[in-house]
Image 1 (cartoon, rainbow, N blue to C red):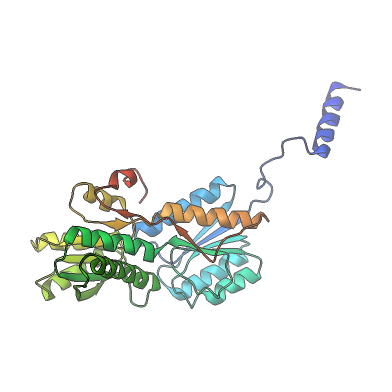
Image 2 (spheres, rainbow, N blue to C red; image 1 turned 90 degrees about the horizontal axis):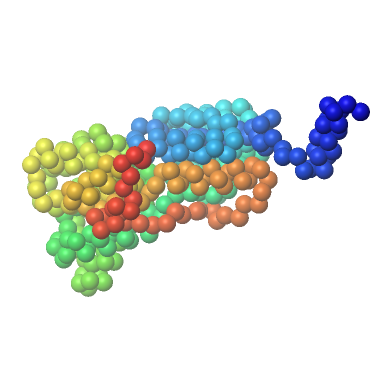
Amino acid sequence: MSRLMQKLLCVAAFATAGILAAAPAFAADKIKVGISMKVLNAPYFAAAMESAKARATELGADVIVADAQGKMGKQISDVEDLVTRGVKVLLIDPADPEALVGAVNAASAAGVKVVVFDSTLNEKANYLTLVQSSNSQNGALVGRWVVDNMGDKPLKIALISGEKGNPVGRERRDGVLSGIVEAQLEKTGKSNLQIVGQGWGNWSDEGGLKAMEDLLVANKDINMVLSENDSMLLGARRAIQSANRDGITLVAAADGQKEALALIKQGKYGVTALNDPALVARTAVDIGMKAAKGQAVNVPKVSYTPPVAISKSNVDKYYNPKAIF
């Protein structure tokens, strides 16, 4: 028997016994992962998409990304297209908590493992889990920081919200406001805060700038700005600087954007809550890929990342100037 024939027989024997190291699981037929983003017009969403894409690729998947550009109808079509293209895992940041239920249910019925992340989807929909930060827990921590640092002075709050009807925005502002009230009651036995005006910033820096300009014109006694994310508050800060208004504390309900953390280090920005897009996205990918491989997935309907309020006292732990977001 030739030496070549001997080698071939050994290889066959090993393969039959399951001893030979197999090729990567996805080499012949990679799992396709679809990422449906409601929008990519703010750094958070871009970072979440890039992190999800990188993690899925790292795990050996082919990735298809769809940007709904803020259009609910387009996101429904995007999901339908991703299913048609054979994705086995769907990661979705839904534009609407109700309107995307049908598309998600159809995807699940087709055998796709669906993981929702960031924005809320009706829990009656058929998906594995929703991965996000806890707006109530983060809000409680941010609210306590506000009271600890602003004392018992009456709060005149300008509120900058993302978009009308958005459930995540509502949860974020409610979380912080509830946190403030609870901390005030605990500290003084009474609550003293007033929302002097609400502006809509569409989650973006420029939107926050415009909303804050209008709020500053209409209200002369603002001493705190509460924004539902860092991007809008960064824009609001520029408006405050341009108007030469002093004595306004900057408070964000979420994100931990690196530009905000840099200002916190300098004492020019009060507090924000950790809503790490990379952590949220990677967690969502890991759950979806595990399910697609047929492994047992035991997760609650909502999977929360750890709550953190980031201020000058702990910002060095979270600030990374090289971070995507």
